[in-house]
Length: 216
Image (cartoon, rainbow, N blue to C red; front, side, top):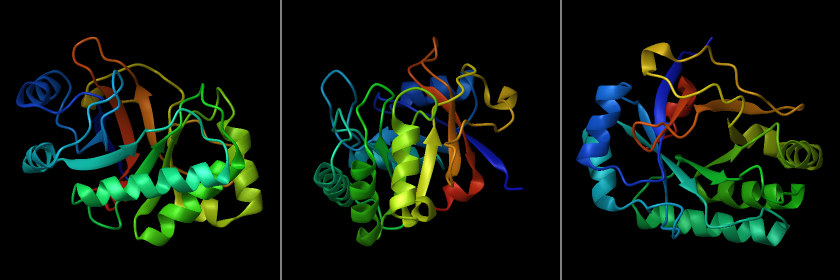
């Protein structure tokens, strides 16, 4: 069985003070999920300086694309993929890195969008990822429909599950790796098991160590 590796994600920019707070209160993450672009009142966009800082600490970057509020329609999925790839290249993030689409449980979502995302990210040389909630909302049904229509969706996509939410912990107290999964073929290799720490603005995650090979 692959080893499970602890990390965090944040909508806030990673500064010296945020990094120090995470390390002293929780542990040293092996990877840090960050958003590719600014979305007002939602996320600070990654910068090249921030990437340099994170990587100087021996932490890998897990890139997230979140400039959309619904995931409906093949063409919209393709547009999101193109924008994610453009921003990853702009920031110097190399090919073979997984780009995660951020699909929240309150988003409308259909199989066409998922296919558009997968079928457009994959040929770019980047790897395909989707952050999702396989319990609440429409993702599970849409994903399994997309897999039925194109098996490469299951083969090429790494899923990052938001369920179950068991609460933020220190690295040493992390739970056993047990993410919720869709009821069809899926590579669920990441689990956001704790959200919205009271101490600093992070979520806590466990990843299959295979994911680390495709982070920057």
